[in-house]
Image 1 (cartoon, rainbow, N blue to C red):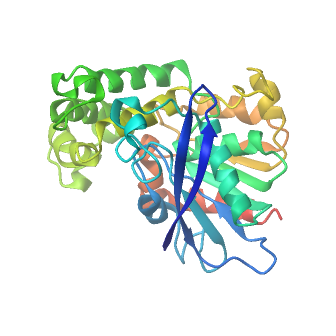
Image 2: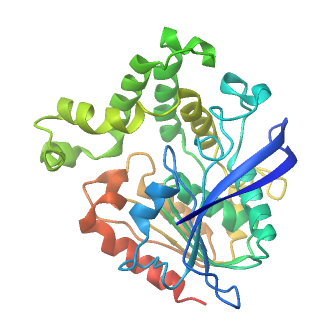
Length: 334
């Protein structure tokens, strides 16, 4: 894996404000073909980075094989690797970080690809917020890719999903240590509450009923929160989590100058072969929304992943075949 950076100046943001200087950090796997026709873009997800993205979705035995494809993994703004509250200049640091949309992220990624002289993509794919970016790519630059595979995500963040996000936001912001984003020590109590809320949404009810947490070394649900979910979040910068949360909450492919809020028009503009893969028991992004999205995409299909791992099914070794089959089908389009 090679970690690279792309930096630009005076980067205007969709919702107002700008970055005097903004940096996109991205990793690359594999080798770019002489014709530049083997490029896959695989954006990161909420609280994830290029390392976790590589681990979950790529490998020599996977559909996204670096031996065949040049895989670019761009890190979300706000996630701690690209420009974020934790590493920004003083005017944008901590609680001063501006509101960044998926539109902004994808526009910056597009600029990065232009700097690499990459004009066409074989595939854009992603899980969770990575999949939300795949939808964004397909509507923002509809002629640029052959196929799109959004996994366990949505093209527009639904109200039910937003209720979950409000709870997460309040968990951090109501911790007195948070100090409106200008804390001197991490708001650990808020982050632990944040993790506990996540635990009830990430997996499904059948997962807990059948004691699936025992596979993680936990004896009960409470121990699972302590062993799995708390370590997943307490090492993150709270402002980074909130910046990404705002981006997630305001995800909407139709909220651009090209579509002016017309969701059907936005999805109808997608030219790429689109295979949407919702988790059958995903609470964040329920399949009912994915089926609706597929019905609005000219060349779109929706295939549910039958798994009690809910949103986290992409991490279940037993469910990998569903994702790789769809990715292989998408990669065969061109």
